Image 1 (cartoon, rainbow, N blue to C red):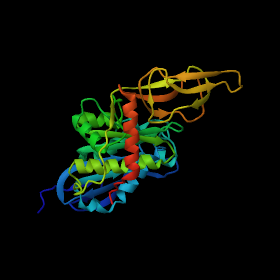
Image 2: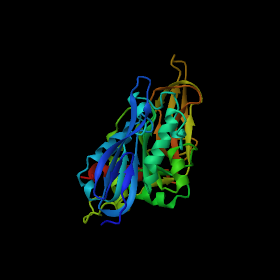
Image 3: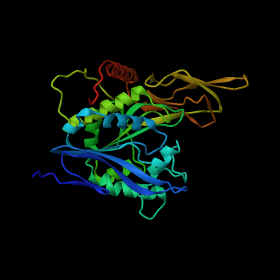
Length: 344
């Protein structure tokens, strides 16, 4: 008899070595359509951590959904130690609506821990925590930028979370950023429970970026190996690279409205005085050059082509040696291109 206890989610119980899918009932929509949450479980026969992978908290962020789809297709998950719980779409109403928010325009990632008697989103958050999150020992939550605002693939960790910091190093993203917690977010609640958590950001809403997906799949593989859930390959096939670490980010905002023409790209180094782009009067009367006041690398950028005064244009991760950081990011991209490491 195994000394690994059974795992129960909703109406399903999983023993060591078993796998399956549970559709958790959440509620119903206006047209009597039921709302469910699909939870995928892979249990190993050997003891180990319980890693939770989530995406689709915002329904228009498709990057994480595609990453987790590929993870679920992996052939060697049957050989893991511990348990893998995967929720590709946490907020199904927003996903079906191809939008960021719930039907009542609330952000699910501000509603945790939720309530069994609250709004649909609050009930969803409560059920998710009670039925799924309560089982996990580690977590990775996948997100993407807003529409027209792509993000460089990056990992965000909470200040003081040493275990998550080690997981972030294992993930090997181009950039790791230490950021504060927002009350009501899943990461905030996981932190209160003592669950080490990574938040992945990459690409933009309603788009699937192949590089961001590959970083995500490779990162999950690396973290699972770091946690002892997958065996370390006998032969190292990927050169080592250094991740850029930052504990502060800042947005460069539009000094006035107009057409936005960037002259710099994601991952590029900037110093005070670097030309980032320009804002042009759409009627041809004048142009305003946008100069950086900061030192760091570009991790987010506006691609929409126009902005109002005060709109966020360039997201900067500050770092004391931007040129070296840019070289490290470029090397990381080259390694990703040359050495794929899928789960199989």
